[in-house]
Image (cartoon, rainbow, N blue to C red; front, side, top):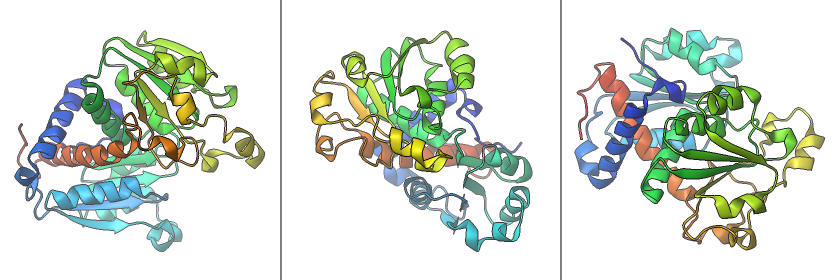
Length: 313
């Protein structure tokens, strides 16, 4: 049976833990995986701009010995002629073994997965979710903190439109003794459906505040986010809110010595470049960890769909 990953909840906690184990094995033994996807093709369908995610998927497939078919501009694809996402997925299924897709509309990846005859990985759909970024985040937390439970995690900035935040909260809800601190202006607070359906439903400890300085000393993980101009309908609102939270060395001095600072990137100015050399800065490590987790996920889905032999660690 064809299997895709559209939401982080498509993976069980046990599967996520297994993926992090495979990713860490890839880091330790890259040669073991160098040819495992020989003859297989990944199609990257990006209807929305991306640098890290698209190139991460492509690098992942190449390092597994496979090949890549890439669509990076919707304007040059048949979508510009009015072709539906469903038809595009059916067409690409004739050429590739697996699809990674980004789209500006929530639910587009699910439509593609339902139509395709090959696995589809959601590489971000509007403000909905971004499961492979969450996998990168989890691997980063595990490698830096040594665990995925017993943590106080602060999520700061645009919590309303931030799909990476929504997916990360969903994933962390499965681990024990996680306390969430939501740091945002009122206009960018976490949507009620995430708060009620994930935090409340799973009895997660949660605090909401607009005060980053108050929250910093309490955190094991600080996850900064960009205020996303492309998600606003009103430019005045964007300009008013875009600099709400800027992390500087002076502010970070209030944090614990082993607090880690994360960001899904791209950043604009919400983290000062002066923090880049601080040992607590982990956002570029996240980028590299994303490649390893996408390698692990590609292997899992191809194995689940009987396209390659199952990978064991």
